Length: 261
Ligand SMILES: NC(=O)c1ccc[n+]([C@@H]2O[C@H](COP(=O)([O-])OP(=O)(O)OC[C@H]3O[C@@H](n4cnc5c(N)ncnc54)[C@H](OP(=O)(O)O)[C@@H]3O)[C@@H](O)[C@H]2O)c1
View 1 (cartoon, rainbow, N blue to C red):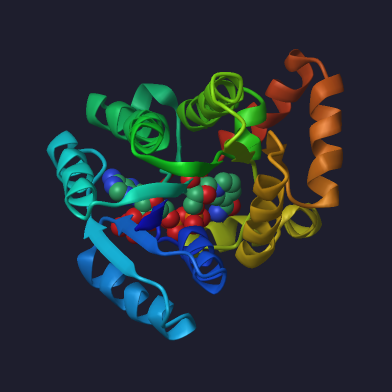
View 2 (cartoon, helix red, strand yellow):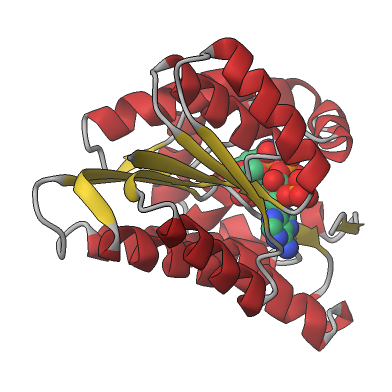
């Protein structure tokens, strides 16, 4: 049987992916840290589409033995991967000097390293065709002081998956989703409110972002930046010298510390 794996299905954007894929009739293998959240989501997905098969496996991506156990469980199902939706991510906003070693490792492992491990697994255990969508961020399109590791890991995803598109055959589609603001967790919603009118312009609902991502993946587009305003921001990002935009970001991002994970 073929499955689409959704990594980070217990989060807001991840759940939206899972629901939309269930509506498409895809069998789903969902993962996140919390078993209870996954079990609830499994029931919801089977309500959405009783004709699909849903497997869940709780896994902390920071723990390699957990990740290996998940891979072994998937293989034990005699299953093949027809889709990989890598959504998990940790965003920490503070001066890099305030990080400890543990924090550095966690963010790079969840945001980047595990995206590569799951992709490698998906390629080695693929169905005839395979779709891969990875959630980066507009923050990955430029270096960001006080958000430095987050933006660097999201940028690394863009570079890696752009390169990988040239290594795979025509039956593998790969899209990088780079949203602006998406009202998901309470702290993110609060951040968007604080940004006022511009926050509102950049903000796109989880459902909108996921729909755009899935359409882009169907077309095998390299990158998807949902929302007209965000596309304009990206245009100005490209033409503005670093010394100007990084000073603006420094002023804005040094004012607040956020460490939700
Ligand atoms: N919201 C935005 O404005 C925005 C903008 C651009 C990009 N993004 C990206 O979109 C993705 C989803 O964001 P979201 O807003 O939907 O956030 P969210 O609701 O907080 O979801 C984060 C997901 O990552 C999982 N996760 C975190 N640490 C983990 C770990 N150690 N092991 C396994 N899973 C872990 C969480 O699992 P648990 O539920 O078990 O904690 C959850 O499923 C992230 O990659 C984020 O960087 C978000």
